[in-house]
Image (cartoon, rainbow, N blue to C red; front, side, top):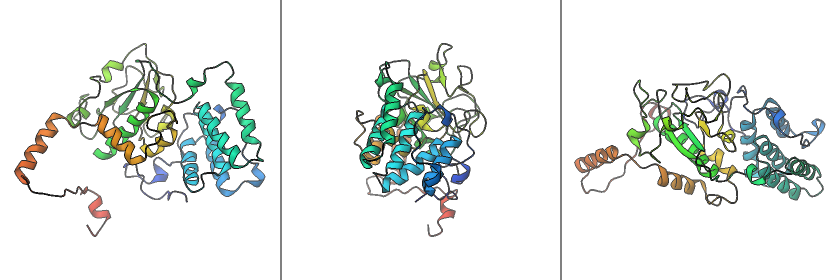
Amino acid sequence: MLQNRNAFCNCGSGLKIKNCCGSLKAKPPVPISNILPLKNSISHNNMLPFDNLVFRLLEKGNIPQAEKYLRILLAKEPNNSSALNFIGWISCALGLYEMAIIYFERARRSLAQWSLPVENIKIIKKHLEGSDLNENFIGPKNNIDKYILIRAWGCGFWSDVFHVIGCLLIAEISGRVPIVYWGENSLFTGNTDENAFSCYFEEFYNLGVDDIRCKNFSYYPPKWNADNLKSKELNLWHGPYSRVAGMYLLNRKENVVIGDFYVDVEDVIPWINPANHLFDLGKDEIYRYIIGKYLQPSATVKDRVDVFLNKNFDDRNFIAVHIRGSDKAVEVSNF
């Protein structure tokens, strides 16, 4: 049921899961102590092996990896009360209290005699007394000063594009204006601060990284500021606020959130709230929507494609298959 941690990570880094996005040594930007004092799902004495694994991950603060395992379990057992209660915990860690209530309600319905989810809901509601619930639920915010800066992930082209798509989904469900910046850490730019993304795709809103380098803006993760947004790399793998997963960007109040570590669309989809227009769409439909709305090839790319097609294919029917020759041709011998 669990991921093979010796398999190559699907982010495209070329590293194994245990050394990449699934590293148990990653330093958490949100420690478990920040979660409200919710009730444990079960006691240590009668934990099942899976519950114990998740609980240890949460105690270490490795919330993204704990959530991955919980989502895998819920895909097979949608009414697993323990997993639902744990996801409620995680929702609270992210400040998504209304989302947490949804999961605790599901946990309560799946095991009617279990009182812990009910107690957790009471704790949350007491915490929220006098506050605006809408502030704690992911959704569009009508504030023009909310942006997401999507920096280059720094790996292969399509790995970087998929990272962009994951961050664009965060922009869609959190009401942020997306700005993509493929700077010096991109494999597809020179040793300048030129934005390589614009070589391949049209800009979204005629906005660039310089438009959000403002002394009055707040930034998350806090390793970033107005002066270093164009840095080649900053604590990507190690150090404070390294390996920040996409879930931590969902419900921030800062003006600018920065996505510099790989964000997978599949990891963001479960956090789409029921009021969002993307909620009922499947993964493929979400990909089509994001790509259709944002990823328009640049005029230069379109012209080069037209020249190539006219020269090599004319009006003939054809099928095009791209296989990455650097590694895929070696990994799969029968190509």
